[in-house]
Image (cartoon, rainbow, N blue to C red; front, side, top):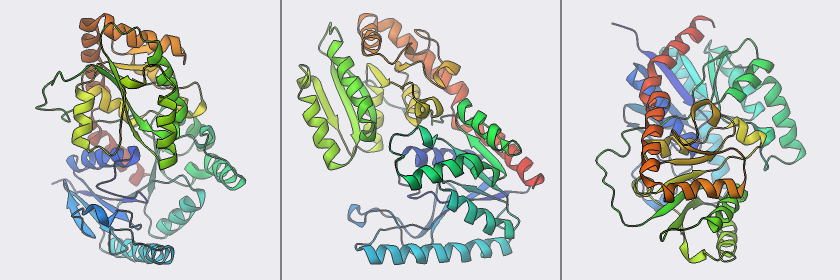
Length: 400
């Protein structure tokens, strides 16, 4: 019988209930590895969940065959600055003890580390090297391209991480061709396997179109406020042949939500815009599944050239047409008017034209959505990545 590989996933908070894009991809990767006979233990040293939400989450447990441990002794974030930071130190101390204990029991063959902090990479690398454990690190963003990466400390961290971060680890899992090239440039000896956006294509199984409305939908964070404004301006130009709405499913701080409402009020179609926040995963799936078109404009920035938004996979799995721009990874998978509606430029009028196309040619738009789902099944179905990742892990262990 083939020996089971033992992997630990480090420095990702909130498993298994976090709904952030990195956490969603983490869950899909863990499920794929589990199906390929790789036992994954997710170790959380930070308690991040809100106790007021009443989540039935223990400090240790199992979710879909994946073990998880909160080394702080609780998954719930306590009130008070001092208590939170003492608990964080307690969690780090217990994590170190746990890693040594698992190593003694031969329960770690490889570590998957999620971070973009160079000091964190260095500390984990040094500690795990003492235990002769190889480290693999995902790559999903290009920090110098992010507008929020300001300040001398962040600049210094991003410079060092870009130059040395992937030299310190044994394997990398970049999400895009851009990030693959960056890693090859700065860490030519590090093993690489590309892991694009992933999705669970059984997500919408058993759902039926409810026909309760005609709407376009965008899902995202209000940190990308410029993109939300771009969508509002595009929607303003859509020649509505029928009553159609724009649904914005967003997360953000109170000030951002207030700004959004003020911005929406500036447009003549403000009565046709609905804002959703804090929806459950089931509600979100229903909203995706019943949309006319799903919006994800990408900008001509380093950030958007490097990333591959997680929601694209979820959009494609719905079978509805995805409307986007020809930036970054899009050109490697999509052809305009065949398996997506792709505006050549990040331009309001061009993007509005693609939305218009969905309303004018609904039958062809449905076909585009079906073709998009086929592309997703071939390229982004998480179930297909388990054996590939297992082979990559085995090569990384053998070469350590």
